[in-house]
Structure formats: structure tokens, C-alpha cells
Image (cartoon, rainbow, N blue to C red):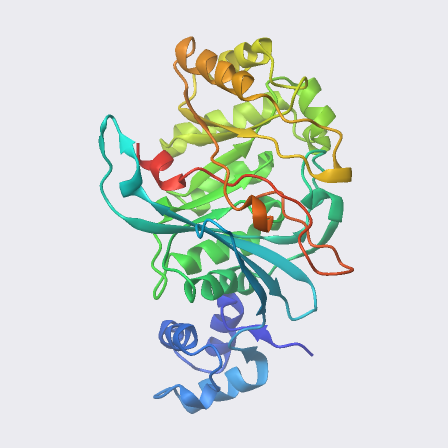
Length: 373
């Protein structure tokens, strides 16, 4: 029988309570494991004897391991290939930013270096988006909350992580229970990430969106919209048939009314499919009564896996100008990072035959700047 991750908080809490161990020891255990990932349970001082028994018989400090670490040539992106206990692989990507290198409103931007971690929630994905390489894997399995959190533990040994985005492999809201528990763990000691620094991306799982604000108030929501009308969404995103655009927009209306937060709209630019002026006007009319930030994502070809082409740079800029100038919708263009190491948030794929990523794509423009402006 495989042991559970010590970061599976619900399981650990239940086992401790059943053994008469106060759960207040859990943050101490997590802190020790983060600092000593190869530790033995007996290395942790001052635990009740029953706690050692529970840990030894049912839990491991880490159930996953870092199989490989690849740095981009520009030194701002690092891809981690992580091997799970069952032999499957997922990818996580560290993106580093230095806010002092740019300007905002004509003035030097404050702050300094910071890192965002793009994290996976599933092995593969069942959504089958036509432009996304992860979908080509099909759905393999859900990650446990501990396996999700362990990606943060591994990444934190390489960089101080300030923001987390669930934009890696998988549809986070299709693994809802583990997602919620993982985010709650990340917001607790010793991680102590504010929910304002965590963003969850979804293709639009309506019933889960309807629960999200009550379960994780303050969390940032990003929606992979990718088309302004239902017909085009269905062509490029098969899951859209189960979650019609009208119902999705109604759910977002309720979510925004409850949360009072911006919603981030992800829109991949596909040449001749969804990038014409008429599509920009349709998107503007769809979103003009919402408080949103639209992130335009120039598509990166993914070899034989895709029939799509990249929208031209001028087309992307025209699309942005229409949304900004006519509909007054804040619109950014996603920065390209980590292409040389296939460091792609949301377009990651692990080939089961050789365990390597096989595609390239852009990753998110500095999420913190988007959130806090």
C-alpha cells in the first residue's frame, strides 16, 4: 500500500484525531519537511509518540520527486518535471520577474525580483481543447492535495515563490476537492500565501464556479474563454458543449457580484478562427458590463498536434485596440517566456514513452501586476 503525502491535510488531520494527537503539530511537521525534504520522521523533535506511529505507518514526507530541472537560456524560466509515487509525471514552471526593469504609468515600478509558480492539478486533461497539447494526453488521473502542494515545496527550494497560478496540466475545477484543500494548505503556516496571490484557471466548469467564492473567498479566478460566441467555442473547446456560454457568463455574473473581484479572461489568438475585428467586437460586447482583464495569448504552434496558425502581431494589436478603445476593457498581451525549454502554462504535455515535454508556448505575463493594478 502506498503511503499518503504528509501534505494531504485532511487525511493527516483525521489520522491524528483518531489517534488522539492534536492537529496543532501539523504546521511544525510541514515546516520541518520543507527544510529537510529527506528527513526521517524520528528527526522531528517533540512530537507525541502516537504522532510518530501515524507518520511512520501511513505517511511519507514527500511522495513525489524532481526528475529533472531545465532552465531557459534567458534565466527567467525553470521547468520542473516531477515524478509522482505512481510513476506518472507532471510539470510545474517557475517564472521569475524583476519589476524594476519596466515602468508603470510612466514611472519606475517599485519592488524587485519575484517568482510565480505555474502548477498542475491533474495528469493529463479531459477537456480536449484543440489548441492545447495537454489535452492530447487525455485524462490520466487527479492529483491529491498533497501532490499539488508538493510542487510548491519542490519549487520553493529553487526560488522564493510569491504567486501561484493553477495553469499547468489539467482542469483544476475538475479536481475540486483536492484543489480547495491544496489552496487552503498554501494559505496556512508555513506557506502563508495570501489567496490574493493564488489564481485558478478554468475552461468554465459552471457548477464549480458557483461554489468557488464561498469555499475560497479572495481567490483569483481566470477563465479560458478563447471565443466570443458558443459556436466557435465548441469548435475549439469540446467541453463548451457541456457548459454553454450563456450559462457560463451568468455564473461569472453571480461570482463577480459575490466576490467583488476582477475576473481574468484568457483568450488564445488563432489565425482566422477567433482573431478578426468582428470577434473583437463580439468579445467587447460580451464583456463590457463585467469587471475583467483580458489576456491575449499569441498561439504557439505545437507541431503535428495542431492545425492552427499563429495570429500576426498586427492582428493581435488591432484586437487589443478594439477592446481597449471602444469597449474600455483592460487588455494585456501575454509575454513569451521559456519557449526554449517547452515551459508552457496550460500547454504542457508529457510523452509517456520518454517522459519529456514536447511542445512550446507562452506563459503568463506577470500575474501580480495584472492583479494589483
